[in-house]
Amino acid sequence: MSQTNRATFGTKLGVILATAGSAVGLGNVWRFPYMTGENGGAVFIIVYIACVLLLGIPCMISEFIIGRHGAANSARAYSKMANGSAWKMIGYIGVITGFIITGYYAVVSGWCLQYIFGTLAGKMSGDAAYYQTYFADFSASAWKPILWAVVFLFATHFIITKGVEKGIERASKLMMPTLFVLLVIIVVASCMLPGASKGISYLLKPDFSELNKDVFLGALGQSFYSLSIGMGCICTYASYFSRETNLTKSAVQISVIDSLIAILAGLMIFPAAFSVGVQPDSGPSLIFITLPNVFGEAFGSVPGLAFVVSLLFYVLLSLAALTSLISLHEVSTAFFHEELKISRSKGAWIVTIGCSVIAAFCALSFGGRESLSLFGKSLFDGADFLTGQILLPVGGLLTSLFIGWYVPKQICRDEFTNNGTLRGSLFSVWLFCVRFVCPISIVAIFLHQFGVI
Image (cartoon, rainbow, N blue to C red):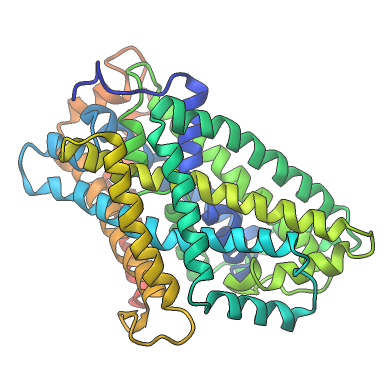
């Protein structure tokens, strides 16, 4: 499939919002706040921004170059540039990684729908123990998590089958501004609470005594996770870019949007948490166990306000999850559509059904079902471990080595400068980062995950 007859995004805004939507997700609204809380607040944010500049943007540009040059799904794009060598396997790693993540990510996305339903049904009121029991009972249910995960996958399926411009781009233009507006509304409400200034200070005033090895490595890993690098999404979306798309400018704009939403998520959560005395290092449970109680205590003095804020918050989470799930689904849909030479609709059905099966088993692995395990963990945690701590770092490392040392420098320069129509004054800086900074940083992340450093 050539560049001339391949679907493309219709507008520059569509490129930015769709690709930003692939990066913005639960990694920003769920993972970033608890990582910030566990790693010293503002000092973590400073290191994170530095990591986005040195690691995230160069890696994103690398995937842009491969995707646009290949003008095909992730696997074929790498194969074209690898010229039949073993490097082509990087693309297949991305497709496999995206397929697995789509399955278990749908489970977490489904939790958001359950909390919307629970809020509307008046079940989101109680003390901290109530919310802990509520989450444990729901996640261990034999059918509820599966139902919501499948509903989420079918909503994603509907958008994907509409195509690139009428489906992905149109949905992104609607959902990304809506997500931002909802986020700002809750941030304002949270920052106006009594005692909220402590939470704001925690996020904006760095305490450099908190700076240590874990902060650096945690920030590196979060930048990798948050920008959706190494899972085929960025590469696949870049295959829909026009030849006029400025890759460097797009990577910077997307990274700014992604980081802004992550920081706003912190401003949404921590002022409210500090207002009611909740510790910032509450961990992954912050969103689904700790935060509902925070909203109840912080906004409960005004009748109906806690209900409205909670509902808006879980709608926000659902939108963030959906924008990411669309991009993950598209990685595998494009692969099956182009490699099996079947219709886009049939390719999407393979992904939706296959990932529904993965989601079902991952959801069932909660609640002490020990037979559903991987790497000595629940199937859900095992899938997260396999993709997040093994496949993503390996894929990102191999991409950096591939684009930095194997792909001819002139091809990279041509894509970087849009065949000489752009100045490309930062090309040497980008190439240095891809050849040296990115591989070393990714190896450091990988080794840290296993306690080596």
